[in-house]
Length: 547
Image (cartoon, rainbow, N blue to C red):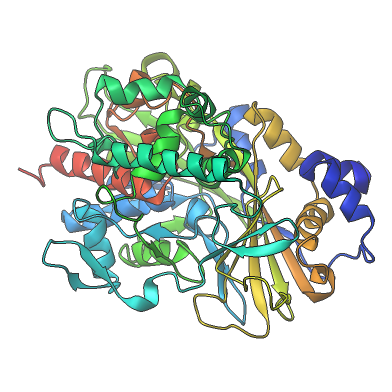
């Protein structure tokens, strides 16, 4: 594609037209594509099955496969249960999955998830983690956690670029009619009713983690609709309201309002509100985003993590499928310094904290005898770019100033977050993290489109998009790095949350216990953490560490 075709395909015709009239089309001198080992992971599809030599085997109690938040949470929980004989194997050179981060001489910055809402008092496990990290200063008289001020997202938090100007907040009030504002108020009242809703057992319709949500028929019926259909059922047609809800769906799920389950859409707005009439829980964040959580989890595992290892095979050694106490063989491969190495582990239990679509490729016999939920789970693709600026772009005095989260109204992207904001560095150089979810109906098409882009194309998309709000962005950018997430996050389309197959995918299989955020149907750190905790608890009980 030429430049005009590229911008039309990824930003739309109005963006392409604006971009083509820019005075400068230069790209930064420095930059590269970083991250995911696409080629290595795709070897699994080819039947790549190396075997270790007889002296390359080790016996352990547990092997954890996958070093994202769920695998790391599982390891931390195992240590708390006094299960210390384990190893965690991660394909990438760095731990963290989509919660990983990067750093420069100026500041650390995120490559994926970049905030965590303050957990409600019912989420004790997550509160204990934050307390362990010295993020909390105690609890209120009602038991709610008190987060130290320096970890809460500082003001100004959010702004929206609409009609050529920056405005405070993300509600597009500029140009909104009284009828639009009335629909916003009606939408908020409906969400508030769902916050107050309880089933016969006293369970909320929406809460975190998802396992604590009610599965009452009234709630689960929402999973039959798209969020767009749900809005239409209520007679809400406001363009501004639909943009706001669509932005929320793209922000958390990488899906449009026409693709997202109404259950997931309402979950976004209601699960983070403690009680009817309250505001959503405030955000905890760091310059590097959730990479700070990953760093702490990794530190709790000491030297039990091995990076750069591609697990190629997990084989239950039990004589029959019903024999769940037999050992398992785990084989992993790595290339380093021009040489290759194959190792094997024999374990009592395995915690598989990887994307479920890898299950039939990794687990011997799983395709025939395991859950088929991996066929129902779709994963979206994301383009993330980190722009290193010599100075921050100027905002006219009559407009709202640079904030932590900076969103473009008429863009398929989510805009950018400023890494220096949380550190209170309000002048001089900065790093902007730009997020673009590819929302194609077919995730394979999105993945092919993304992986077909080279560095220059990715950089051009990010710069042209930001350039409308910041015409000087090209001259300010000294370096631009890109991460292409081909399998970023599970996509909660209609039917996924109510799927019995999804629930069945969490059930242990022949000594293998499953831990991944996608098993909850929504791609959140809280769910990765909860699934890791659950899998480790199952293993601890099976090994006799829990009575």
